[in-house]
Image (cartoon, rainbow, N blue to C red; front, side, top):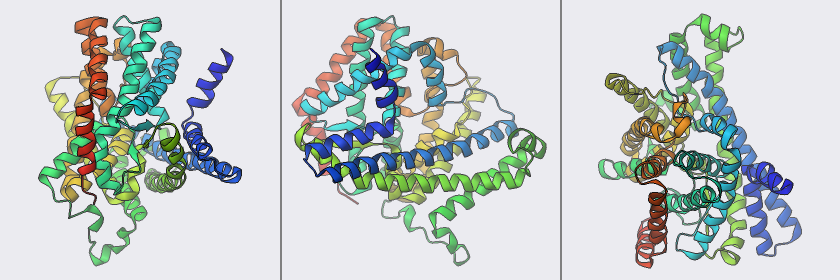
Length: 456
């Protein structure tokens, strides 16, 4: 029992260790020299820690921005944030969440081994979040004990192969290869952005080909462009929040404009660190993963977190964030007018998810796709949380909720099936989803469709 607790709390709950273990297993399976095994494993872990460090820098900067935004525009409501809702949930359902996570990862490997959906999900924190949400919904529906763990882990494992499969055709457009898959539970929003881009945009006119006026050539450097744009956004928000509030509550006495500028540049630095971490991970995990693909799950693809797409279109990252956040503001005022639950734009999901939506939109529809696609994504993650909250049981009364599209869609479907059809409905849902994965004609048709996509 102590070993299991150690495994769940100290090993598998750490995304960097999880990814490092995958690299280690892959290198061992290939019988690489000891020095190459050590180097590949350590560099993979370090790359993930670099990525996580950059993400923490960005989140810290955005938290100040979110506080200033709520104060400056005097708006209260529910702020979707995965970390916040999970922190509340695990106080009461921590053990169920851990069991569903561990068993769900095993289901993922089995499904990848015995179906045509060859995706191994490597975004550990999102695995944990989805396990937590499923535990909350199934508990609210009356599941408990072994039935809770079995139903939750099978549903979790299914999501861990289905969503990467849905994203893979556009991922091939973005990366130009089949080597890497996508593992982030915002996939439905990214696909929406991509296909809106396909039908209203022109992918030959990429965001990365935007030509700056001669006096603005310094903006060709993506780090400078992000920093400059965010300085404008932060300073305007700080002006609305007010000098007194910012200096008393946030900056520790530092001038509020100087504080805002430094936070904007900190945001830009965080993005730079994220991109560096992604490059290191890709340089190590893909060669190492061939061992798993060859020995354990033939033709397996590593499915990685959303920043994996950022280096392919850094300008689209910024455009996607700003466009998604603007949509969140528009959606917020629509909810106010409807006298519905007000969803305040969460800056963290609008950055990470909106940026990703921008890259997907750009891959399929160029500049117009990046702007309009990520705007549509922003509206989606504004309205979906409203429909999710009623099925979360006691968590539905918290002042936060899950933010990303796949969490909300999975939760809405699972929760409403449980609400109207009980445990029988959940078991029927599981059987239907497993049949979809195992029916050869469906799998072959989907895989052939993905392979037929032309690369950029």
